[in-house]
Image 1 (tube, rainbow, N blue to C red):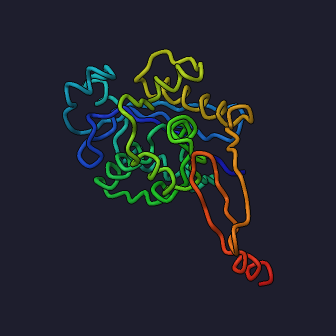
Image 2 (cartoon, rainbow, N blue to C red):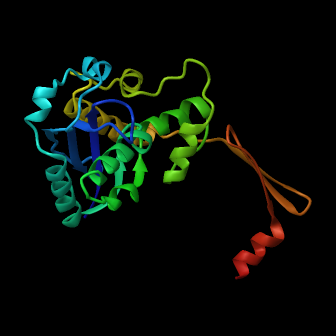
Image 3 (cartoon, rainbow, N blue to C red):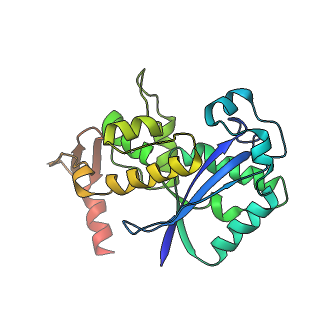
Length: 234
């Protein structure tokens, strides 16, 4: 059976290159099946930015009582080696959690390449596609990257707290990795349901030798009828 590796981090700061995790929560998720969350403190082996500490409330003393980055890397590699993991699930996971975790483990000699090669499931990308840009939901890593790099209207919010408000998902104890991950998984499970999957309106017409498809909110696409026939014949 294949799974998504769902995870969330609380960290020493917001730099994906120089900051480190202080807490991790992770779970193997498959559709609407029940899931279990593992949550651990991690010794970052460096000071925590005071602003970050104020947000998540994890003291340096508490983090130092946790597992080392080396132990975390070995634990995750063990899980990946014994399960078919096909994607990573998390809010803003492509831009933040994945590179920060990868760089943190690389700093102790663990090249966790499986992580950075996973496809992405990110409810915040779906929200931006559905409600802000009126585009088809992203499917690939590059789709997710492009959605987050688009210019957003002033005041656009797509963080976990906002998404939970929009979709009526309970989020108690925000900025604890376990609580955030539990809300993220419930949010993802809800948005997968047919009633939350937007149906894009489209029109299709023939203009000269081209087939023109106009998808509401996504733009206009012209396809050569001769090329379509050639592909079918091929």
